[in-house]
Length: 197
Image (tube, rainbow, N blue to C red; front, side):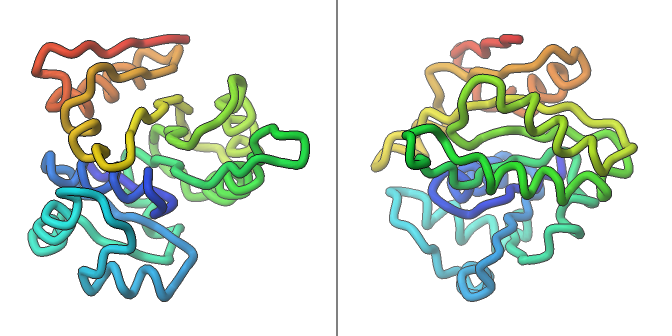
């Protein structure tokens, strides 16, 4: 599958690299041009055990790439992960401004069915907010799915590659099928996928 990961922080970089390792073609998008240039030259911006080996291997095998060009990445992708910062606001609630800003931007570039996945740490109800933000500028078909991450620092690659569970929030049968196919290599060890609405 062709995957775009928007945001190359801890969650985004681990997500993109691990999906590339499973044979997907992944483009990671970030607005930080200097960071993107370093990653294009195989300089990994975070330390996480085993990530560097997967990172370098998948860049060399042309399954993992990096760009600042959001439009091209979205147009090419079948699946788009939003792995953006959600810092706490003054009242302690998650600031969704980065997530909604990207959601509003990508709408016009959805020219065929795509799945948009919230990978960021977000509150209940965010999928509907993201759906509305995309829909304001979009006439194409898409589903928004919640797929929270359960990564522990120092164990993130192992946690991703051998999850004890995969949680997926969707009411769409079409999205459910695609998500089942996407995560099939990770749940073959007998660990369950939980679909919620």
